[in-house]
Length: 110
Length: 110
Image: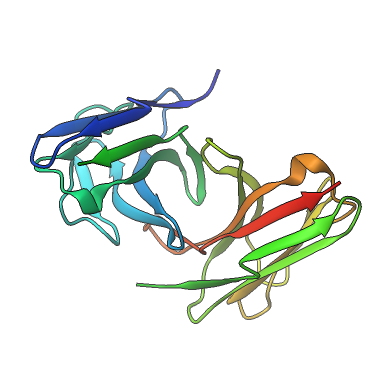
């Protein structure tokens, strides 16, 4: 089954404790991206990757890092999480303008 | 960055009614997309529009890409309970990711 998977689905952490949210796709897509969704703000792009070892900033990259060492994986790294990064995070992969979204990771930073 | 203005913010309708929502932008997009998000899930692509003026249907859904490439509307005919959710418009330009509207919450009263 073609899908985008994210782990964990839910995470509660404390300020400053590094965390990684994993994203994996099995559709051989070159393009992958991360979004955050906040009430009243819709979905905003954090980072995207056009291919292996090629990443670029989206609209709200501050406080986040990404890496793309393999085509199928695109982890999102929060080196020092802060409460304003409490949000619902979505990974997506696709080609051209067609993107498929994962199920989301709900993060709470205390 | 680019912004999409989506309206209405929310809709309360009776089952069986038709629904109409729209998005406008100050910028031109190559592609316009409509997504639906169910509670606890990631957005799912409903319709993609690639040409100015294009009118596309998917079952009870109809969407059009404005002639100026700066706007789009989505219509849902004869709404049913499973249409409940958040509908997002999104624009795509070049190699960047998607720019999303803030969403329209659709609530259907039986």
